[in-house]
Amino acid sequence: MKNFKKLNRTISGLRLTFTGAIPQIFAFLLIGAMTGCRNEYYSIDDFSKIAKYDTHVHFEGTNTGLAEQAKEDGFCMIAISVDLGTQPDIYKQFQFGLQQEKEFPSQVKNITSFDLLEWNAPDWDKKVIEHLQQDFDAGALGLKIWKCIGMTYRDSNDQLIMIDNPRFDAIMDFVVSKNKVVIGHLGEPRNCWLPIDSMTVISDQNYFKEHPQYHMYLHPEFPSYEEQIAARDRFLERNPELTFIGAHLGSLEWSTDELAKTLDKFPNMAVDMAERICHWQHQSLTDREKVRNFIIKYQDRLIYGTDLYEGQETKTDEVKAHAHDIWIRDWQYFVTDDEMTAPQVKGKFRGLKLPREVIVKIYNENARKWFKII
Ligand SMILES: [Zn+2]
Image 1: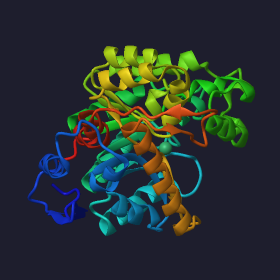
Image 2: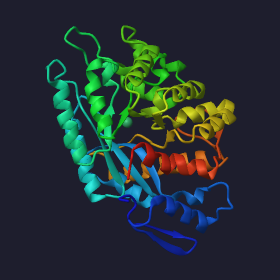
Image 3: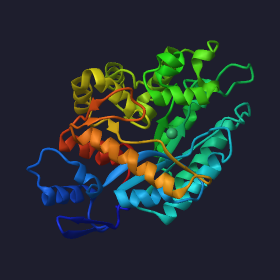
Image 4: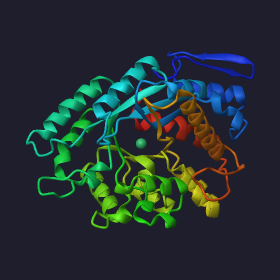
């Protein structure tokens, strides 16, 4: 038990210290007992008392605002290196993550990545495997594959390299043999293929205004949304043993029905919620019960994450305040039935008030199970 080795929390006037000797599940039961198992639901006040995971954050520097806030708010974060094609590159991002993990061992864990710059070299996959071995040895829980596969990298014939390309097979076999996981951000939200005015949430409108190179509505020569999802699904069919976490609700954020079908089809797949909770909130505007029932039905396959970011240039106080705001608003959405607003959502929606055992799974147990955290 490396996580939350010393999670000090004041509960009902009693100070509890969880040490490495106490499994987290026991910590949960203990918290349950202290706060009253008779309550079927958590409240806003329980927020900082519960050990939680945010499985999708990014570090691009040595600032420690996020880690400090995570400590205050009871989070362990999984930092993901991502092949943005800019500096700091994936290798530097991973080093930043390791440094943070060293400083905040109970707040930070890491996921590595690889790039396709040397794709045309005959030993490209061998080199990637060597690099992954090194990062797994350094403590990486798994690797991230990003939308640059399918949207940016091209082969020697100038064709986009899609994720179902057989050249990824050896790498995925290696990941399976090492009992690691793959996080895949493949494709984009469906909004990406729509004009800005037709997008459902404000955050997508802002992102694609700022990143026109990724706004596929402007690039009809690129693969369609359906083609991206189909390539991902063929990749999962090729790799049935692979533990796969679909980032951003597996790019099926727009429909709980479609996400349900995909989860039914691929039993080794879970999804993180990073930066897509607003899509559930958007759907809650018209059919809150449907979203709620979906989360309850798939409670073992959904993992809390945010996509929070801290760079070398960000201001620590702002990062801390922003992280706390997001974390507490998400908690309010999941545990209460308050009427709420969110900056990304066009209208008022009501919280889902999920049962306590569902909250425990999406905030803690699923992260530990799917990321194979011992
Ligand atoms: Zn991300």
